[in-house]
Image 1 (cartoon, one colour):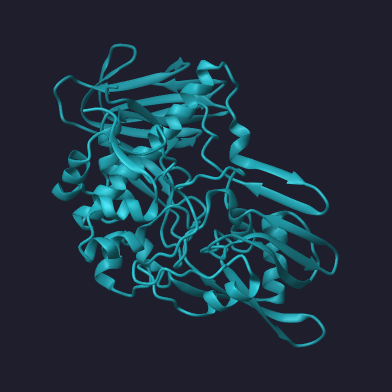
Image 2 (tube, rainbow, N blue to C red; image 1 turned 90 degrees about the vertical axis):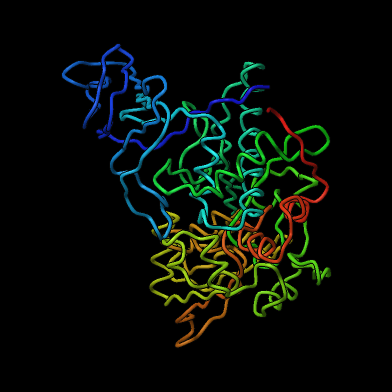
Length: 443
């Protein structure tokens, strides 16, 4: 196997502004430099007074250059969402999707990974953490490309519905989100897939070394590349894959405590155990307030959030009822209760019953719960609910929670602590993906 190239979707819109600091070659054979604009018009790409079905721009051979894209949104729908000018190596493609344009960056996997581990966390993170992240990012991507290639070989239709599968049955709305929604490129550049910001964030020699030292290495389980998921903070216990996405159990993504010293993990699928776990602060690798470690894992905008391991959110009756109505599109009336129905192995809610004066409905899975109970995304679905009463109905709901993200696979903060404590990347990977092995796919 040779090193693949991948197509990364960066941004979409009616207009795309881009620039080339030195000459690129367009797909129509012209040399281009400076600031450019492409506009969606009548089903075509309008650029330099002409219309096209697709455009591409490649750097001249032997030049180490980049292109810039304006108004790239990062952290879409999250609390840190903002727009940036971003720089990218490789080729720029502009295509039509629906009634707008999409900008795509075509780049080699190893160049992509150098950016990903610098974008997902600070490039000043420890070398062992960066190596571990390079391996899991490469594994996740190659696993995804293999699945897509298998679909093409079998002439199966693209399973775009897997991004948004749901069922409504017996007053339940169960929905999960995955990475199969992109038809015209391999991955997107935001947290929906892996955070990729080109060369906008400086890649330190250490980040480059981490990718180079693990070149071609992936996690394997019984002859298949692992679907190596990761999140910011597991909250002290690993979640299992099937509790967040499709009902498929991966033996390397299993229930476990995020600790080497404390092995015992309560059964957090039991409500009383989950309640106790979430309200306390058990020993775990990711249970840290060390600003040095957090700054290694988190970019500046991630550090705007102070609480990762345990957190609290409070809503008044009016705030919560309006929020749920706005986010779900369903008018529950005033909210009477939020009742846990099913929890996963980390205490994360898989199904939650919302009881209102007008309607009662069970929702899930974890990301749907997080989206419904926040203007962006609740930090995690591992939470317990306390209510304050004024009259007959609750006047306030207090959510006490654990962790940040889905909690499946590698816990970035926990892995950072392991790196600081002297664990090698192989040990970090075997902790978060038990039973997996390291193999090189290409040189």
